Image (cartoon, rainbow, N blue to C red):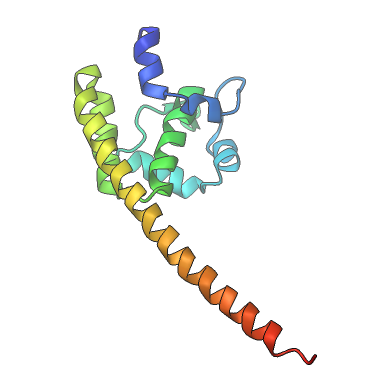
Length: 145
């Protein structure tokens, strides 16, 4: 993969991943990410994370590349992307650079939903702030002089 393609795939996500020496076990990755070993295995089973190598004993061995991909998937999930869309995104990544326009459209649609949700949260927070201000005003006027 050339450096432009590598940059397009990671787009700064790799900066969120700690440097690791050599392959990591499922337990080590679980500790680094906060995901359970069960969840990591499930990510593989449903096609979100593919190509995790196995050591001679048959145990999973995660590379830094796996961690970068996993970090992106975690960010997508944390921002509310449905698993079915995450699976589609993972399929497109595996299909190669010709799918970049479709990946971009998928991520743009997700970004738009996230921004809409953030706007909704800001409106909801304004209501909470107004309610708090009302309680503060009521509490200060109820104090004896």
